[in-house]
Image 1: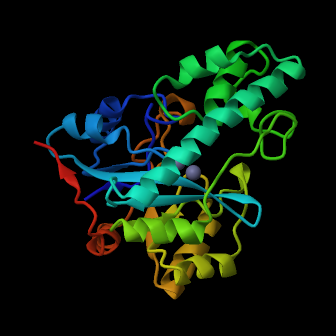
Image 2 (image 1 turned 135 degrees about the horizontal axis):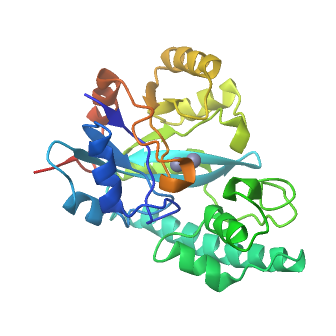
Length: 282
Ligand SMILES: [Zn+2]
Ligand SMILES: [Zn+2]
């Protein structure tokens, strides 16, 4: 059984619609795919309706958190999307994402980059707006050659000249909310240094004590040494060693299925969830 527990669609900052992500997941030989868009479950309905035979959808979400001044991503699975407090927090985060995207566009304009909010909003469509949409707009106007160049101190990288912070959750509270909603949570890419903070082991232990169920070990931004270290840490903290491709379509080079979770770890992860069940294809 092959299960990829981390993917994005146009419901947030991926480039493929949810139905297309499902098709690509099956084409990549997956049996289970988790759709984990940023701070939204808006893609789940389309994804569930488009499941090819033999593929199951694990409903999920990647929640924006901040801890000790650093951005932290928390994956939640099988929670009740109707849970009031959790839904309200997602709405607050997505509204803040829109406000700060407008503010970053203004700062870029002041720096001489001719991107407009209309361009960014058109790229985001109905989805949750994120920095990758701004990065794509910057590449479209020729300010940079490739979207990933935007994530630097010069532009919209953390602390960058045009970077603006947004509302985010305390991860311990986020873990509690997901658990309250019947779900299970997994700490996303804690050692993806290229994109942010290398979270120290003792802080991961703190989240484990707060009710975290798993930690992403198998992630494209983790090298072999980091994977080995995190696998041992997960065992020591009794966390599930999880994994997924974090595919964003064209933006990440269509890598769905590039990283997966072991079948026994998958069963262990979802066994304690009560807020939902995986959706099976026809
Ligand atoms: Zn992430
Ligand atoms: Zn992600």
